[in-house]
Image (tube, rainbow, N blue to C red):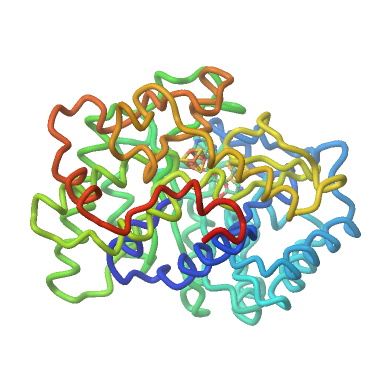
Length: 401
Ligand SMILES: C[S@@+](CC[C@H](N)C(=O)[O-])C[C@H]1O[C@@H](n2cnc3c(N)ncnc32)[C@H](O)[C@@H]1O
Ligand code: SF4
Ligand code: SF4
């Protein structure tokens, strides 16, 4: 996750990101993505969770979910994402949400929106939900084929309209692949037409029902083309003072130094973004970010479900954070290592992709957008010239910052 506008400029998520950075500095969990169930009423052919009609056999009990929310609240968790499967299919979805909100946790619901009707939209609004993040992949036939259920896209668009009418913010998420690429710019236009404030583009994760589909990823050149489009949108927004779209990028952390370089070339001040990246890198693995699956398994990243560090049944959230911090103390390898990449500590490369490709989470990220480029000196100069620049690793020991 990398909110590009909020990172470099004063975007809509700057405040919550600041809270996450503070939580990390205090040695607390900064954000949790919780797949509260693996059950789903759709059957997307790319689903990294391989979700279907069945719950996982050892799903957390309702009582266990309540205890977990208590831990989150007591640890002052700033941000919680309720995901799945389809989170709204979990029997105590509303109980989890309302309890988390009772603690003041900022909750984002990541849903396919098929269960969002007017009453649900009102209830989400009443609970102070700022964002509902829902998936769109392309035009009607394409979307419906991708999710395996006819008529789904029409229902999603209806739900988006209802949510907007009720004053709930909507984010559109899409998996970027060779299949969805032809629809990306139309999707951006759809988002604008639907009054959506955030688009999340995530590189295809080759796990679950996408396992082994590395050829399904788009190329670095295609990612750069998309980045260049987003850069122009951000610059136009800065110049006009318009509110503008927030762009969130998943599983492609090198997108951030790529954007910073282009801004530098255009004479745009990137010091705000760099300052934040010194603490929380473009890949947040090891920085208080964690994933919890429906059976309570704790993962450094939701996209690597077999990379577990424990379970909430025998590990507290606080112990999990301490364990995850150990990852931040390790250097990335290969093209992502500090010797080979001047952005090593602010980017880190995608650790989930490294894990999936090699079994070593610190291995190089072969999908880096920058590695092939010869001249990357502009941003490197900026980093070295910043006297207060410190690698984030020493800060990762709670209390040392
Ligand atoms: C697993 S779903 C859970 C929430 C909800 N059921 C939904 O589909 O929006 C969360 C997001 O992950 C995305 N996703 C699923 N499989 C993916 C993959 N292999 N690569 C990238 N994103 C993926 C989906 O497109 C969706 O936007
Ligand atoms: S991507 Fe979401 S909607 Fe699609 S099968 Fe997976 S959990 Fe269900
Ligand atoms: S490992 Fe990859 S997908 Fe996971 S948080 Fe880091 S960049 Fe994102």
